Image (cartoon, rainbow over all chains, first blue to last red; front, side, top):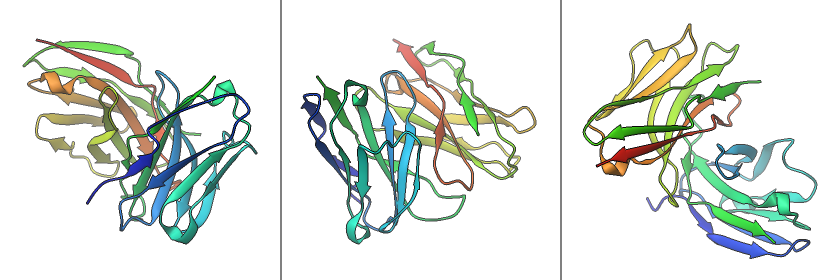
Amino acid sequence: DTGVSQDPRHKITKRGQNVTFRCDPISEHNRLYWYRQTLGQGPEFLTYFQNEAQLEKSRLLSDRFSAERPKGSFSTLEIQRTEQGDSAMYLCASSLDGGIRETQYFGPGTRLTVL
Amino acid sequence: AQTVTQSQPEMSVQEAETVTLSCTYDTSESDYYLFWYKQPPSRQMILVIRQEAYKQQNATENRFSVNFQKAAKSFSLKISDSQLGDAAMYFCAYRDAGNMLTFGGGTRLMVKP
């Protein structure tokens, strides 16, 4: 069990550029979640997948954000036309669907800085 | 909507002593889970302990235990025999059938040698 991995760990970009992050979940986990964490705050839910289907999206996920999980394995989160307010830590978590008993395991996060 | 509140932005404890971190939540659901996650500086979030709402017995994991008061909607974390490695941000989180976790704002725990 290698845990949840995320790439890159850090990303610095200029305002207006597009960025893409990748998350590799724990291999047998069928659920994958994206959260955003700003400095000094708790993580906030963005979206989640069950296998390849995106089942829920937060109002935080504006039209500039898109997430995919092709083939139900790794996931990508793309932010288009980045803004300074997008600067945050983007966390990925995965779980094995166990109803209300499931536990989410987090990756190390991708820290995005928009200049 | 469910909310989770951690009223202590920072706490400090002497090494080997005991500290309690507070968490309250608001929900109209009867079946849910509560979690405490630890986030060390520049490291990933890890699960410390979890509690099922329908279980009256408080969860324990080695030096970590919770005091779950369902009627009061309170879920505090007690760390016994504090160690330097316990220094981190601690987040209380709630989950019901809605799948996603709702987190509190966190408590920064400092451990003094």
